[in-house]
Image 1 (tube, one colour):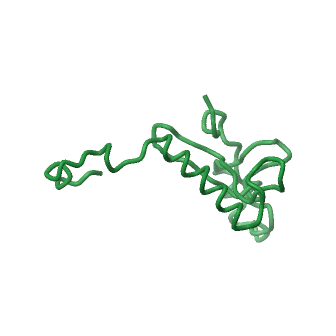
Image 2 (tube, helix red, strand yellow):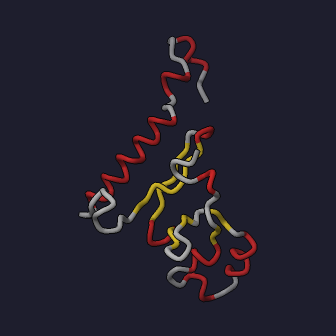
Length: 119
């Protein structure tokens, strides 16, 4: 939220808030940089990257980079970044819920409209 001093200094909201295109570009560069730090290839022909561009919401000017090994479901070929609350609470009392891959059992598929590059 802009502070009143912005107006007095001639600064507008457009001067301080990035556009969605700028946020997307930053996320893409961050993903490539993270891959480079890990010694992974930033293109699809290289090894599987640790982080992927999972979601975006244009109206919120928000994006989500997610760990592929935790939030990508090879079975369904889709991101699973939403919470299935019923399954989550069922798993909360389960001592095995911390087991590897447990988050895929309480996550839900990301809706098509929220996926990266969705129309």
